[in-house]
Image (cartoon, rainbow, N blue to C red):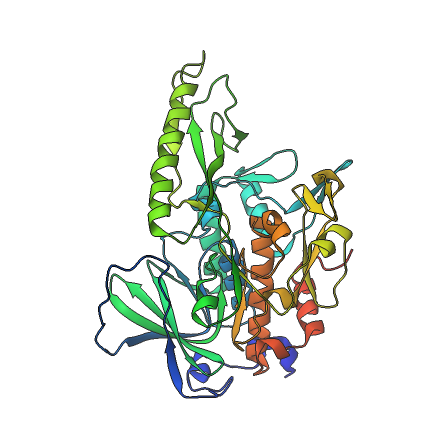
Length: 435
């Protein structure tokens, strides 16, 4: 049969990947070890030891946030054996774990109303939520129920055949030349490894791309928190939700300009923000009619907005987003849901255009079996707000999963795939690529 039907008609399997059938190693295996950013009080030498390889997959995805979820579903639907690795015990990352709830950038606001930019898997998820009355509409973006979102993400993964592994923290990789061989995991079952045909870095912080030696920029930015308040009476302490009497609060000012990769900073931010959430809720109770309001949930993970950003084959430019540049290798549109500074002026959100994301922006320069999706793909600093939003993460994740499946089917590196075929597959799966 025609290989353009991808893995469902090629019978490639994880066993073939493990045997080196996709891309042969180009050099002797080596281990790349991450360096700590913390001040060392001394050093110890870890004894050499064997690490058990407990699993293998065509596509290994690091991080189960919006990008990882979409990448996993997309790749699995194309016939790949997919292993989705998540350090927590739920899908959605900050989207669900930090009560973000607002699906920004799925739509672009205009003076005449909202225009949908992101479709595909993002749209499927929203349809399931709306069918169960677990989605509310704000001025522009939909606002989801986080617990329902966790459930439907898992349901969509199960339907696609995605294998999920919770409670695993990716810690480094082994490589053969310009290819990743294994992802090493710290788990309650010990230190173990999984063998990968292709890897998609959806960690949010670009962990994998650093371990492989890819180029990136690193930013210190704000850490914020969103939280839910129950039993709200007359007050409106934040955004509406799909549940009566429940509002989402937002500490938008957060903790300013800090290193989101420093464990001491992350700890102090969590402590400070939790106290502020409690204080704001308690203050709300002083309002007439809100005396029974209570802090319904606080984030299980701190709201780190940006850290590492890939220096990709082509970083999306501010000019491209501001002017509506078209790319031959477009993989989707995302909405402009913030004021954008460009060319010495500020473009208000309702004057923004939808903007295209090219395939080259999720493509690393060095590693042949790695793609990067989510808030750490390649873009210029001025696009930081839009590029990290949930809608954009779902979009880049779906594209990355589809591209990895195609590379596997044709025994190619990620950089050598047929872009027109990738675009056809994305269109066939309801991704908007045309103005």
